[in-house]
Length: 195
Image 1 (cartoon, helix red, strand yellow):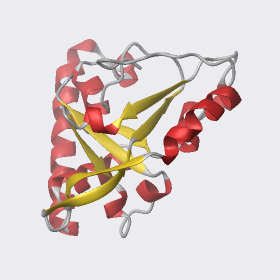
Image 2: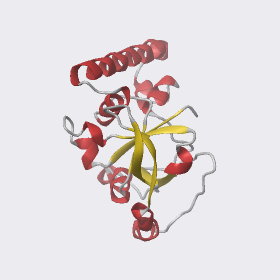
Image 3: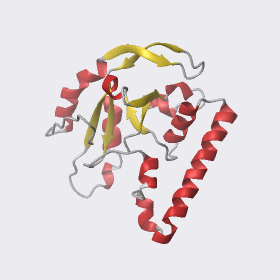
């Protein structure tokens, strides 16, 4: 998982990685944020670090929508190349419509509706993160019973304070009244124009 100013470190086991990374989970800082319901700016306490688990080693991490836009999503290997552009345009329109309808139907802000769509597997511009290391590791080893050989997993650690200077980071928990999954996963989303 490569980001600007990233530092890579390898561990020999998940246990060793957990032991070294666990203290990061308990670090917080206070910053100004926007209340997703009222739109008011206020002081909020946020995790200093967020985590992302991936089952493999990837050169970069991009949003699901960016993978579709670049024709890099695995679905493109299953459809004729001549249909790729139309497929992307159709997916993009479906997501835009679902986003607008969620905002209207459930009275959600754009960030909240995108977070809801993200957690229910529609491609958005968000990259998923979590405030819990164990959740990130869980995503990294997801479907490991299907692995036919040993595999390297990646757990990215995002410095929230630094990242928030160039990206929007949103807590998906405010949609918990209608969708408990983001809260269970301690879900956050990063929206960046770096793609």
